[in-house]
Structure formats: structure tokens, C-alpha cells
Length: 152
Length: 152
DNA sequence: ATGCGTGCAAAGTCTTTGCAGCTTC
DNA sequence: GAAGCTGCAAAGACTTTGCACGCAT
Image (cartoon, rainbow over all chains, first blue to last red; front, side):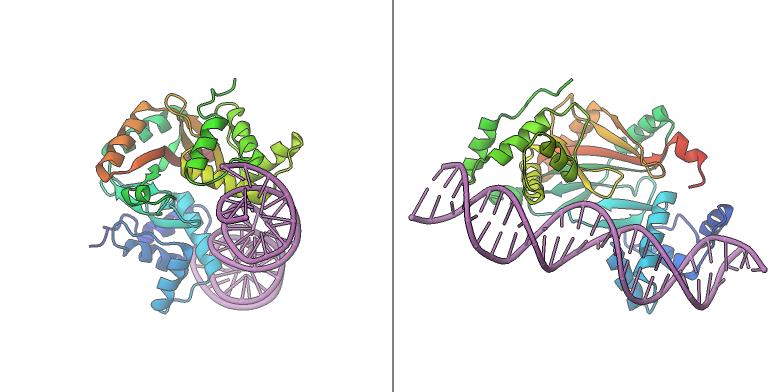
């Protein structure tokens, strides 16, 4: 199953142009790739690069890094720090797609879960400080049952 | 004001020994440094290195990286991913010291806030999956009032 | 026509690792 | 005494940047 698209190429173009920037084939393909991603899947810059190459889309790693960072700043993508040492990106979905992460420090296992209270709490906190919310994530770090069985 | 110590050098030694590991002067000094840190302050590996050098404690960067990662895995330190591209560490405090982060993608400003519901929610989620909680953090990413005034 | 965006290659930053010698248990 | 730990230097992984050319507006 694929997540429903929340951001069209036209909307992206309009927003870019409003800032004096340009729509490009690369940006459109990157947006489309994330929109076609099954729910819960997230890509690193390298993952995205490979996936595009398999579709015969040659987009340089530089452009990918530049684009995902830009889209994260625009609120189109969520930038995730999971257990590994590189960032992952996924489409920033509204409730009820929004999910959070439970991470094991020993096995690096990541479990996703949903919780409606988190967004409500985040909205309230952001309001208090005048922030516009792009994304919120509850990261629970702990030790999984498998991890508890190993010494470290 | 300094946070109250929740983990003594003796307790650290006992826990290390129980795993067949050793207590060392370096580990004790690193623990002490975090315990003397004002509430809300967090250090990167580099920060910690500089701070120790100012106290004439020569501990190599390698050892610092190895030690903070170990302490994070033990649940003694929290490993934070703030707006910058390197990790920060702080003592992992129980309620009511526990705090969360509101981060601006444009200005990199970070605001800390507390919320009692988060820990409760985290505990419940972790229980469901059999995880032991070491740390939980609500990361709200958005645009601050100052950021909203700039084009990007 | 202007100036933003891309690709390439090089550089940069943060972090990890191999190894010899030292230290703790 | 055995095994873990440290410091050093080198390597590694991921990400950013300078520049010339191309493309969207």
C-alpha cells in the first residue's frame, strides 16, 4: 500500500517560485519517489540515489543531499535520526500517518508506533513559543527484549 | 545551579565490574564533568574534550567518543541530536529534570521544555514491546518567529 | 537574458578503528 | 597475569562546497 500524496508537483513549483527558486526535473522526481514509498519506509540519501538509478534517473548525490535538506526545511520531508549514523527521510504526513520511534541501543532495532496525543502536545508547546510545527517525533531509546539477553 | 548527582563513581564501578569491565580515572572524570554541568547544558565530544583540557585533564578524543557512547548505551547519558550535525550528551535525569526540544530548522534555535505526559506515554509504549526505557525525547521541529520573518 | 540548479571532484566534519603499551582486577 | 583501556595516527562514513555549464523563468 502506498501513502496518499499530500503535495503535488504543481504545489511544489508554486512554493519554489514564490521564493524566487526553480522547479526542476530532479526535484520533481525526488518528490515523486517519496510519494510512491510504502508507508513506514524511509530512505537515506544513498538509498534514494540507488533507487533513482534503478529507474534510470541519473541524479547526482550532491543534488540529492541539497534537495532533501531543502524539502525538510520546507516541511515536505521529515528528517529522521534513527539508530544508524546517517539521516533518513520520508514524506511528512499528517495524522493519522504520523508515527514515532522506539529504538534499541543494543540491537539497533527500530519499532514504529502511532500516538495521537503527541501531535496535540506538540502543537500546544509550539503555540506557546510562536513556532510553526513542521514535524514532531517521540524518540524512545531503550533496550529491546533481545538486547536484554545480550551482555552488550 | 547544578543538577543533583544520580550516579556515583562507585555505582559506575560496580556496574562496569559486573560486566567484566574496568573503572578508570578517565571514566570517572568524564562522569564527574557531566554531573557538574548546569541543568540544561549539553556537551559534544569536542566540548567535553576542551572542558577537560581546561582542567588539565588530558583525555584523548578517542577515549571520549568511546566513553560517551558506552555511557549512553548504559543509560547514564542521553544522546541528543539537536539542530547541528554532531551529537550532544547530557546526564540522563529522571523526572522532573527530563526535558524535550523544540528546534527551528531555519535559525537552529533550540528551546527546551518539560512535559510530564511524555514519560508516561513512553513507558506505556515501551511496556507494550517489552523494552526497558533508557531515555525518551519529544523533538518538535518547526519554524521560530524569527525564522518566519526570513525567506529561508 | 538572468541567475538559480546541477554534476563533478575535492574538501570537510565528525567519528571509528588498529595497535602498542599501560592499567585494573 | 590476563584482559580491558588509552592514546596516537590513520582511516572511514557521510555530507558539503567551489566552479563551470546548463536550464527554468
